[in-house]
Image (cartoon, rainbow, N blue to C red; front, side):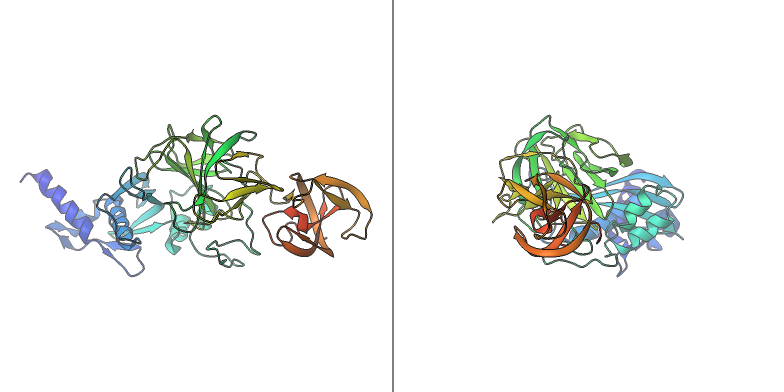
Length: 412
């Protein structure tokens, strides 16, 4: 047996025998594994440690990993004892099962590698200490570690919203503002029918897929880009052709990410070119329902791939066209006349105040502050909350979609 073959065999055996602590983040090479002493084993670098930990993730995966599953680990940045990159558990191309992927940070300390994936408690701590973590990444990583910041509570839908069931995203749709594309499939799981229904499929227009909001971009593998945003959100874009190669590159809202395509290099299936779009929060996929994209509120259907989107009183189902109206600012709302053509504006927070014009269904309005007044019933129930608009007039919150069940800019 040649020296190179002996070393390859030793590496393979080492990877399979790396120990994982109960916390699941510390991997330690044995003092002697297959004849390779401890110091030499440590010199194998972070890729073996990350690959071993990814293997553990595969073993824990719901439904044992299929024979075609394989690790795709990319060490994109190294410096001294630190390494950053991406780790993907790829599936068989053409499979109905989609790949899973994480950002990782690895740190070597006294011959051992500490490995953390985004969504784990150690990730933010290592990111804060790492010499490789860029200034723009630190605050975003701090919101992606899977812990719930003060004021957050899980909802029954599997979403971990901001305080007060806040579903504002500040996101447009994943194509240029002003274009209309087809929502070829409504809300469904990242990998199919499983919950949460975090994903939707889009195609059409100029076929250029763009970032829904600014952030930092990472190429998970060929055809798959992830953008980490603020407020704990991130977005996935898969099946892309000519996608960007990024490793923490800053991207603005509307930045080019690639073209719609049918790429399945890392697994999954694509029947006709499109972008498979997924929404994540706190490093996990979350339901699209209730979240705003391009000034549309996404809605589930009776089954996966059905569903619709609502802009004012206009509802578009799967197979219909969605116009990208751009991102809704966090202090804005969409007028929903609940089937009517317009909503009355008042000089104060209640029906007893004088009329002061009207505002059309589907219009974007900016909210200065809110106050309690007379109760009214709209699409989402009855409320006594009124919103003061930037022009000084008032509209009942019953006729406005904001993504929040309550105030969005404080009380007057």
